[in-house]
Image (cartoon, rainbow, N blue to C red):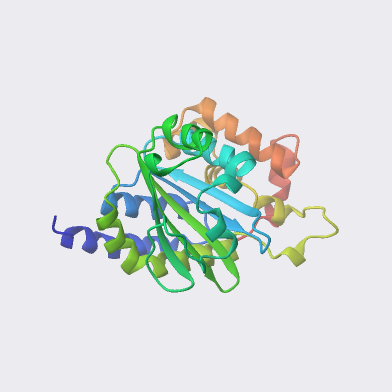
Length: 266
């Protein structure tokens, strides 16, 4: 298949990704581009500390946001250490394994995974079979001290590893650079935390992309119905995101939430 039209589209969405770095729309924008050029339906962006523990997680979907949110939540809370790629994640992408297709330099690797190649039956069932994922392709890298794991999941079209290797292998360093820069802007440094108590700007960084987008619109004075129209969500779903935002930010009501406005990151 000729990739020329897709590559032309790629240039446009990469520019949009740059414009949305550090903002709630970033991950959805990045996935929109990858969906256009490669067919991936879902995306997760995971960041790790030097000990291999997950520090931040975000997810996006072009067809089922609750599905990728719940799947990513299960992965982060229970199963991430059982990921067949986890030994590579701990090393920041610097080691190799015979069963993992790889591409790129020492600090960036391209990895493919299909359910049939996963020996852990529970991991395969919970993270592939039940959500209906036919495969995933991942970018794993270490850049400027950031250890990032970008996962693109396929559900409506099969993973074409050859095409993925061509596209992500060529532009993977750009995507990794954008993801790492997004983390720098979206999350405060560890030194900004005071004795383990989260300041308002730190707590804001714990919000998922949908939660943060909801919070931004609430700050702008939008109602649940208006937010639902802008985000293509039902008002009930918006209320659920609103409740999660209030819980994470430690506020009891809209009045207390709006009082945090001056502490919101730009």
